[in-house]
Length: 225
Image (cartoon, rainbow, N blue to C red):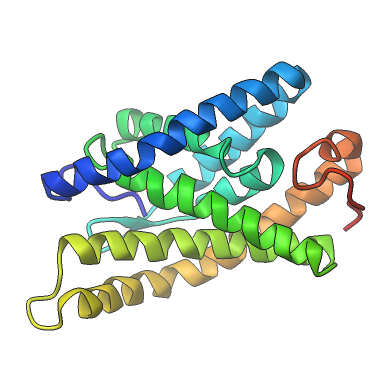
């Protein structure tokens, strides 16, 4: 999903950076407010950031100018809310670009938009919908984090198709090509991420259930798996 350094045209790098900037500002404010009210959640936030850093660093090469890997942001979005995960995702992507040459600085805005913004909001929205339908918690976590992963890659496919439309079929043909390439590797990776997220939430329920009830999407609800 990390689009490599220098791969996007200049106008697209500027555009995705500007589109992501308001979410970063809102995310910083949300995260600061949360940690001021509940400073004991700093450690769990660190765990969520590390979870995203490790999973999204496990890259598989792709021929699209990008790569395939889990993202890890879905779990953090369920714990801290989608807005709060935007600055966390920015830090993760920035360190990966500087330390691992994974992604890039010029493509940081585009990668942030697909992974930390679209992925986080899809995860939180699907989880909330599942809980409203009174589905089992494990099913809600799995669907939310699995689909967040897939949504990230659909967004990356859209970004690449927009930047590099097919000479004959235009945007639609290019999008089908990029999404088709990603689907081969991303569907099993997304399923794996969903299952891993369920295991982590179950562990939190077992060892730190009271703190989990203080999270926005879990607050005031029965949190048994």
